[in-house]
View 1 (cartoon, protein in one colour):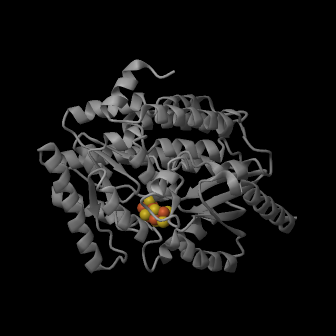
View 2 (view 1 turned 30 degrees about the vertical axis):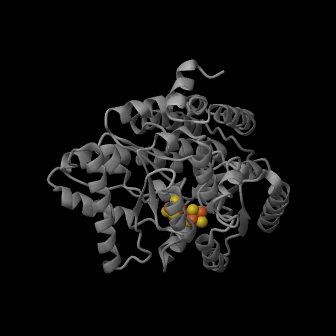
View 3 (view 1 turned 90 degrees about the horizontal axis):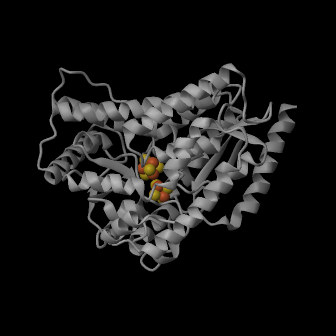
Length: 430
Ligand code: SF4
Ligand code: SF4
């Protein structure tokens, strides 16, 4: 039962109230099935479960308080957004709903069927007015990382303001110069929304908040790599998904509490998986909530997921921005560009650093194999999978490629392939 104050807020945001209420019932049931059914969960997951219960109510209310103070709310689908600038301006930067199949049929009235489900899901949420995050956003941050997104912005902009940042697809000096100009344009745009200049001290304040969040996520990442795995891959993914929508300081505090508990679990040799379960890393495209399909399949097939080399995962939190008190705003922006240029999205050519990183991750985390996950019609990641596969096979690392969308229809087929993959690794280990 949704409290009247939230219904009033939804009406104010022109949300389709019956539709969102129905979607939330589905999201709550799915959360129960995928997460609450697990045994031996860390006690500190309670905060994240409760957050999920209020993700379209309490959190939307908090965000709208910020907006009424004249600060920006920036919705995004990509980790290239300079979120430190938004946070430094006192605003909030969050991931938009884009992981559900429910909104896709509506999106297909404006977009082709054969494009990535993430884009269609997000576009459909806007068309249906059934996401509090989209409805609240001052503007949506768009970027030019793939063909489908790039053209969708022009259509989405007819429904909601979009600010587009041109992300170059090479990392040479010329491209980085262009990228810096784009970051400066984004800064100007934020300053226009707030009416205040983003100086060195506000930039630094935003960087510190996001650095702390990333450090806590790195801590979780390291704990998952222990021989005794203290948390399921499903729960870790859920925490990372919430990292994109929660208030960053509060989120960091709760994640550090969870990590304290996980450290104690490691010390006491508590493992949430059967001893000798296979350890797998997932590579590839992002997992926007509530896209939990692959994790659920893998972990109910007898293997543990110990890492996601994904934008909802390691790619997001692997690098921090190092700044000091003597730096000017220009120097701080240089540091930000430097950090963002380390993102190894498949939109770059060449992208060899990603392959080297994956090989190192497999070694450091003692993984038994990798599953390369591509959202349907994501051409950059799909094509790059050949290069990753070849490099990993040369290093004798077991590799399985899965391409899927958000529908549950291929779950049985994926489960059969995952089980066969697990069996083949076990067989070769024996
Ligand atoms: S995969 Fe690339 S385009 Fe997609 S969210 Fe990550 S950085 Fe952005
Ligand atoms: S997953 Fe691939 S196709 Fe989908 S939005 Fe990201 S880069 Fe584009």
